[in-house]
Amino acid sequence: MEKKKNSTAFTGGAEENAKLLKDLLPAQDILVYRFATADAKPCAAVFTDGITDKQLLGELAARPLSLAPAPKTREEAEQMLLFPELRRADDAQTAAKEVLSGNPALFIDGVTGAIILGTKKVTLRAVMEPQTSITVKGPREGFIEDVKTNMSLVRRRLITPDLRFEMLTLGKRSGTAVCIAYLHGIADERLVQRICEKLKRVETDGISDSSYVAQFLSSAPASPFKQVGTTEKPDVLCAKMLEGRVGILCDGSPIALTLPYMMSEDFQSAQDYFVSPARATVNRILRLFAVLVAIFLPALYVAAQLFRLQLLPFGLLMTVSGGIQGIPLSPSLEIFFLLLVLEILIEASVRMPKYVALALSVIGALVLGDTAVKAGLVSSPAIIIIALSGISAYTVPDLTGTLSLVRLAYIVAAGSIGTYGIVLLTGFLLYYLICADEWGVPLLAPFSPLVPHDLRDSLYKADIWALNERPNVFRPKNRVRLRKKETT
Image (tube, rainbow, N blue to C red; front, side):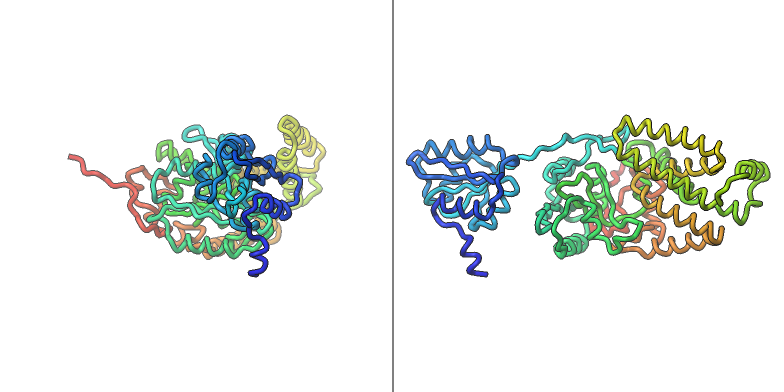
């Protein structure tokens, strides 16, 4: 190991150092910019074309050095350069990582080692409102794919020295920057340490999105229920960090992760905190009702036809009976067929261009549905039920994928043993959700286990004066977040 380290160590010659680094990075987009100081001492800068700001490299590095005698030490050279961000590299391996990240390695003849210049230039999209978290009231900024920009969005909202960022690098080949954000003095330090240790043990070739990190942080990555919270809005992430949670930002992804995670937070919206508590409570209950409709309505329809059709009110029974006469498919197959058509239409509308997707949705919903009913393949009640179930699932966008799988499982259970299957599957899922507590907080908290204090901001939204303490389930080190002043 010592021999390998010495073979990549830089010497005092600029040309030799540049050649050593270029041999390590033979790609054609790795360029060498050569120039000389005022006393004709050679200099060389190795940089990556496309992600390095060449104008800054020329104005803030080449120009000052070309107008003055060559510096004799690295400290003297750093004083001549006009960069606010300078680092050092004594071997080719360290310098290569910086060059591949967009930061050039500068070599000056007679100066030991390399000086890393902070001239990274990355083309970024503008900070805009995320498509999945549109609000009428409240901030409209959303995260983008650059971790540094996302860190600045968080820093701008939490102007406190207690905001800490822990930087990690994941992926042996991708070298993806992952930032762990938390509030010192509020977040549980043991939780932060557990997250860091778990991520440091990850050995993979590449990390391209925060969803990869979420899978590595989950004890059961194959589970249909997610175990890590997600958000695309900086204000939401900051609000969760103020409760005592830990945020995770991944370079290349606009989605931030939060731990610990509770299912109740998916029924909350950023807009709930900018309207009256009563309105926010009604909205959350409405979302819960929509989720129950999305899951149970198709299964109850199948069970009612196969096993307990007489339980329906007489008027509704006559309507349903008249609609299903002459249908060649069984109730289960009919619902499966319609769900398949619904999923295909959703997938096609997402993949197709916007204007084509609109026409495709109209054709699928109106023409195809109406034709299927007239042809006697499916019944009108089944189409209404699947349409209502599909629309209801999108009231909670973060749970849409989970709801699709759970809905399918309920239909299988209802088509097999009827309402008994629905009850048994419900009991199994509740048991699973109660026991799932990878990060010390069960998914069904604060309802199971029951934490009365935390019910103030669950499905029920209390006023701001009642939320004077942080949730107990996160075990914050500082529980008080609002001090009530006595009035005279």
